[in-house]
Length: 391
Image 1 (spheres, rainbow, N blue to C red):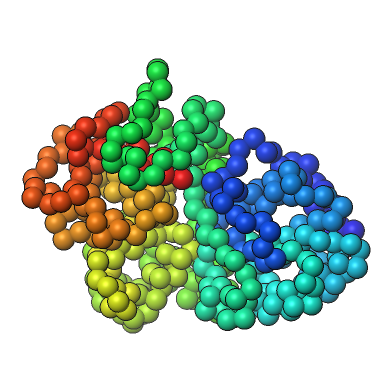
Image 2 (cartoon, rainbow, N blue to C red):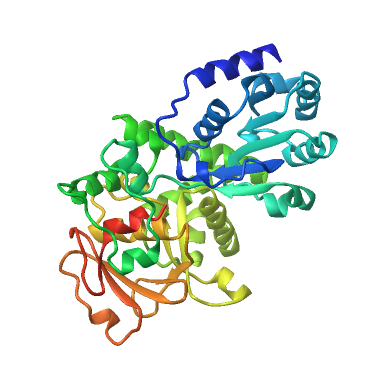
């Protein structure tokens, strides 16, 4: 326990409180058990350490990493028992997916210690709801994604916009500050702005590859109880997607390329999507049938497009990936029969460059052209960059 406390102190001292992710102020920290899940690299660890540093008593708090060597001889329940005996009130467990039988032990900790607040973080591939029904009734789970363009501007000390909702964007209520030119910053964001660490360091490509490899080789196989051979197939599948995205998938053809069944390809894509590496755009079909209606597969964000995909990916791919990624957090987004995207089953969007025309959306109600490389909009023309201000 002393070594756990020492490591915690070291991390706490090194934690900056200059910048907070959007989720920091959305979490109800009073809940007894909180889960924060999301892709690797989006800032979950920093978020919980900031909360401890700024808002809790260090003497009654403890942060641990679930893969710490301490847990080779101790269980989570044992650790929680000892921590409570020492007066502990707030327990934070990072990378919970690295601990076998994590859900059962979290349930026991919740039941044994009614005065203990527990926060755990984990890979977004974890299925809290389907994993253990008893835990899903106890834990409030928050899903976290990478930086918005708004957050990128703040983290980079460029400008701090307020969060803008979709209606304010569509009705042109956003005013540009004097002297602020968004387009150069937006171009840089599209290239490297989605993950906090890619903003703060220059040579980030190695870290991106590490995140992808650990996700495919460790996180998904450990969660789904897969073999090393199966993990290799996940890497081959992502490679196929990266070179073609966005594309309408032919699961039968892909199955032949990686030597699995067609149904296995669909299951594999679902796991890669939940891990935060791809996004699947579905058709606007209601009911359970919608679960199988995949219209297009995208890489999850523009940094992954630039790092994993075609190094000469066309601007259209980047634009659509950005729009899909930023809008999905607060809204339901699916494919449109007439255009690129349908949002909340109400708004139709055609995404393109500065010279994009209106012909795809002529005659449609609530239809908008989203243009790149323009600073301000007019009528039903909306600047692409403004959709990065939504969280």
